[in-house]
Image (cartoon, rainbow, N blue to C red; front, side):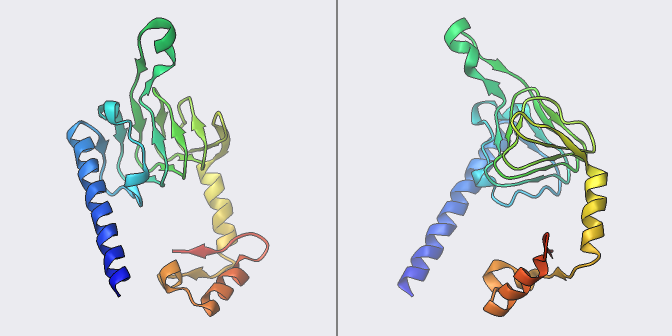
Length: 186
């Protein structure tokens, strides 16, 4: 019981620390639109010295461990100065886990950056990019049509199947639902 209380206190402290840090970034000019999904904003690197150059549109989703680098110090050892540029993520865009967004990049609207992609150039609207350096791999609407066709043949599990509610029976149901490709959960 004591351990549980200690753990809750620790995680509450971490959340408060993360919230204060995020508010400082907003106070310094970081712009985040309405209804954005930032499930672990404390793990996102917002380039704190240049956060005023970073703008996130409305209805965007940014996964954990994403890095926004609005400056590039590679020139400093040779030329004595650092480059910096804006980063704009337009409305309805998604950036997946551990992607790196470099200075001067505009993403979307309605674009997706794959996990671990390194984005060095603009991402066109309605486009999915992946890789290092990130390159277009699909059009978003075609990808979503393909996923929806698979989903129509499968069960979509509700939030009672989230990790904190998993039983052995539910875990087996999820594994069986994957079949030869993947499953779906809200």
